[in-house]
Amino acid sequence: MQAIEVSHLTKRFGNLTALDDVSFSVSGGETFGFLGPNGAGKTTTIRILTGISTPTGGTASIFGKDIIRDTIASRKEMGIVHETSNVYDDLTAWQNLMFTAELYAVGKQMREKRAAELLDLFGLLERRDDRVRGFSKGMKRRLTLAMGLVNNPRLLFLDEPTSGLDVQSNLIIRDVIRDLNAQGVTVFLTTHNIEEANLACDRVAIINRGRIAAIDSPERLKKTIQSVQSVEVAFDSASPRRMDDLRQLPGVSEVRKEGDKFRLFTEDPSLVIDAVTAYAKAENARILSLSTFGPSLEDVFIRLTGLGIRTRGVTTVD
Image (cartoon, rainbow, N blue to C red; front, side):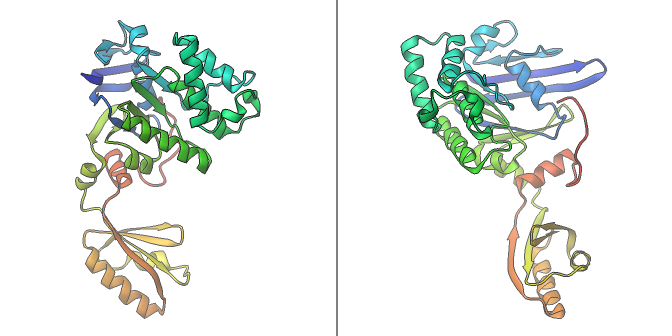
């Protein structure tokens, strides 16, 4: 049985179609990434799958239970961690967990045992009796994730779990996702962090303008655009015309500046390496590092969604 089964899902808001005939399935125990630009339909999909919103058409089921006809039974199977921390600031960490567990009808003995385990897991046990108002953003996020796990869900929805967090919280949450996957918990992850999806997910779906553009493992998706290869180079000195010079080299189709390095996209890395070496010698510039790369999941994302590096800030329904 599939953990999630979505068939021909549509959602309209007046004249705007947020989801357009979306179909996919997620296997039990899989970590499934759901990627897309702002307004692509990610949040709309999660709201339907978690029973918050109803679709205009199509069906969605959780472990065989229809999310619309059998919402309560479906939601008992899942934990939900929203993009914004939904903790109660005036309650303590312990009280937040107890309240959430009661909503899921977890028995007193079990919820107390589970809450203690989760607070310890997320490094919050010593703060269990402190009001959440004094917690940092990272601590609140960790508590939100603990609340999403308090009912021992078979399926966990994570909406941007590491967005804007400190390094410690990021590492803790990523470790927990790996542990959950090892325990057979299905994880449905939406993220803007493409590298996070690349490292964590068994498969990735890319949604754009309400339609699924591709679904596959990160590595297989990368192989679909093998022509997007690149050479990364760093020089010992800066030059105001460096970008323009590198664009003119034979075999280079695009140049991006990434920190103190330049990334040169090409279909022929060998040709570009020779050209970069000759250019450095002619300019009396020493090469500090020179590396070649195959296509990244970010390259796939950009290719499939048609987004450029500078495309940001378009207001649409997500």
